Each structure stands twice: as C-alpha cells, then as structure tokens.
Length: 293
Image (cartoon, rainbow, N blue to C red; front, side):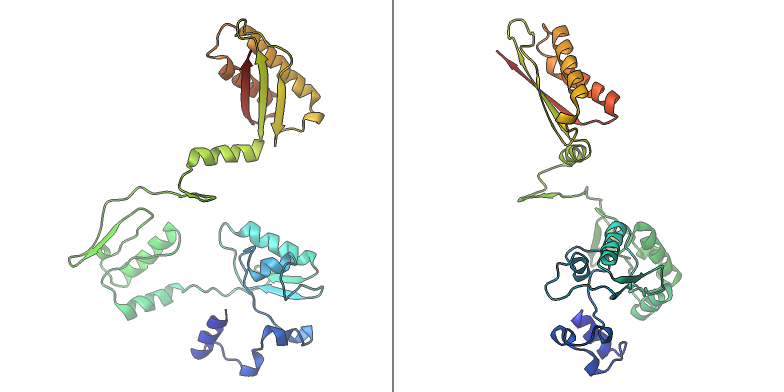
C-alpha cells in the first residue's frame, strides 16, 4: 500500500501534501477524529488488517465505538460471505460501517471499455490474448479487440488446459492438456483425489456411525449386543430409540444371513443406511465391523 501511494503521487493521480502522510506511531498520538488509516482487507481476508481488526487481533490498532470504516470495494463473486461477516463483526465492535450499496464509495481499479480500447490502439498488438476474468469477460474483451482492428484469426480466448504455441511462424492453439484441481493436503500435493474430497464432504455434512458386532464363526449368529459409535451424526445419549432400532436391524439382518459369509457386512450397512435415512432424512457414512469367534 505504501508503494501504491508513492506511485500515485509520482504520477500526479494522488495530490496530497507531504505533511498529511504520517507514520502509524504518530497517528496513534493524534485525536481520533483527525486520523484516516488506509488498510487492507476489503474482500474479507481473515489475515488482512481489516479482518484482524474485526476480531480484535491486531497488535497496534483496535476498533473503538464511534469509529467510521469505509469499504471502498465490491465483493468479488464468491467472497460475499467473508465480506459480510467482516462487516457484521465491525458493527459488533461499535463501528459505523459504510459500504456499497449503502453509499457510492466504490471506485473500480479495473480499466473501463474505452480505456481498454485506448490501450489496444496505443500498443497496436499483432496478436491478442485477453486474460483475467470469467469466460464471458474474456470473450467481451476479445470482441473489443476485433472491433478495434485486430484480425479475428489473431485473437485467442483460452481457458485452463488450452495450449498457446508461439514461435517464429506465429501464434496458434495447440492440443488441450487435461487439467483440474490439485489438492494440497498436509505435506502431500496431488495425492488425494475427488473421491477422498467427496468422502470428507459427506463426513462434514452428516457424520458417521460404526456398528461393531461379535458373531459366532460356525453358526453366524450374533453374540451379545452390537456396539454403536457415532461422531457428527447423533449424540448417542439422546437417541435411545434410534439406537435400539439400529440394534434390531443388526440382529435381524445377521440372523437372516447367517449362512452367507460374503454378503453379510455389505447387506448390514445397506439396511442400516436405509433405516437412518427413513428416520432422519440424512445419509451418514455407515461402517460395520463383524468379529468372528
């Protein structure tokens, strides 16, 4: 932010007196109504200054009742929840928060259409590849380049995985390379796939339940009551009726499949899953353990 202010002043965009810019240590000595502090975090980033201020975790600054905070930004699509959470936290700390659309305080940092046209005319590129933005924005930028005089055959709209080959003979599209998300999991990079992520989503949403039973190896009959463990699905002490139903299904399933060693565990998980969905309309992960003695 210091560098941006420096460049803006050198370019004449920011015309302010040198004495107005002061160090943070000096700002803390002045009356609050005479100080404006520019900070990062307009997109709700937890580690940015504004995010830390909203949680009271900044080492040098704190939000006090009566402070006015201006968010001169639009939430980037996908960031809305974090931005509004930050705003709510700031209100909780007693600040008055001004943000778009409450007031017209947002000034875009992106070039407008005619500014983009001016840049194309100034540079006069032989080839044009729009970058940054969704596909609809890339196509709009490409169309602007064509309207400005760049041949359509020299304009390339590319997406992830598309190869653009550049050599002495020109620019052209190559074969598309398969691509996708690469997940970083602890110290591992790319060693988990979508199946693992999908399992984690199910566990986070509905939890899991484990049913462990002791079975006679010769007869296949259940020995004693099955043990039930649940995490993230139900609190066992408050679900006596459901636990009893699970035990009944376990007993009846194992009795009916006493002679079918290969299918017992799968059938038991299927029956328990059906019971849980019918009773709760939720689909936790169900695991069964059959110990034979």
